[in-house]
Length: 571
Image 1 (cartoon, rainbow, N blue to C red):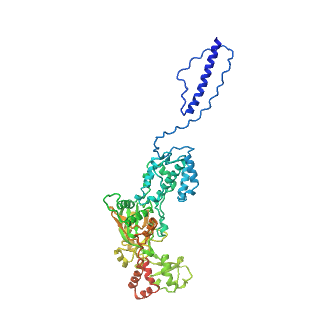
Image 2 (cartoon, helix red, strand yellow):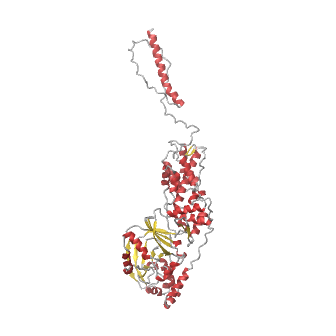
């Protein structure tokens, strides 16, 4: 009797252990966590070990439960809305990421995309384990913000049609559709970033006179920053120039289109186009213009000194003619030279001096008091065979004095165009009263250069006007170096907006509006060719009329070389 009792106890214990082993496996199969098997009560005191009994018949063997596997994640309910976070759930085995990696490794299907953008995407997604903008339920809230902001590109002077955007509310039908939508949005973002900051057109592609390099952001930087941003729309807006004139032009654009004034009459197509052209030009400018800088605007024939965003000085200027256009670029002002010598530039050497010298006519040198040197040593021009040598290897110098074409001062900001700002001769001062002041070659002449020097040296060195006056009156070829950075921005803006919102427009002096309109809009309707350059003849006639009889005779020969040389600097 006692033995049968022990057998029954042992059988019950074996069944309980088997059941405990089976329950976790079933719980795993059902997708639920197994209940805790940890006892909540103190275990009973073990009974005394029983005496040995006869071995019972073996019970049915119980298969041991397999080791519990890691539970699968719970599936999201069908009615759960898309996640609002910027990054979709990531998994090392995300099928969408596998497709993205494959598509980016083979850019052939996206031949129209920018190569740098595709390369940046491949690197960026190589470090991720899941999409940034999309889930299987569609675009995240941040993804939709980016799509909606790019869709408003027209309000920023861009063209919304240039961006191939996915539908913001589309539900992807497959992992491949998710991957395509993710890549498409990223390519649109990178294109928008490039256009917003650097413009749609390479300025040097229009003319070598537009010597600007837009400060673009690296595509990888854009991807990293926008993915981390809490507001992708605000991030995209931040890529546009922050210059005051750009902001004013955008406001003028919205007003011209009637976007912010229901009762306002939209402006003409040409007026709107001109605003957009000049917004594009601001995208080519350096992001930081400088705390103190000089702004030369050729179509306006004006020069400004700007400090902390406020204009502290303005002056009228003379700029180059159509044939000798004043270039567009930025460089730092380094030196002011009082009563300078003048070394004839390459264009004067090859166009104005070489023809008469090759014919043995050296009067042009005497007329303009030009000395000739080679490697710093004086040269007798009559001893040189100008038909066989390279005239550019020689230096032709006009010493400082009342007839020097640079006048009393020049302002140097080294650049590859050998362009600078300078004074002009007294008899040329009358041209500052004209509305159109394109005369001579490409350097910039100002009406009040002594005052300009006063302002610059007061800001740079704290000088008094009397110190500048002394150099002005007595110095000879005296250089004064600046101690602080003063950028000079040579620009070509044909539309400028004042503080009241009024748009002032200026003539398309060199036809750059026409070229840019063709590049942006596909046609130049409303932007005619600039008038031909007729100032050369006028300058030659004036130079001949103001010279003595011998000078007139020399000027009339060789296509009025004397007048041409005088026209070089507008002097």
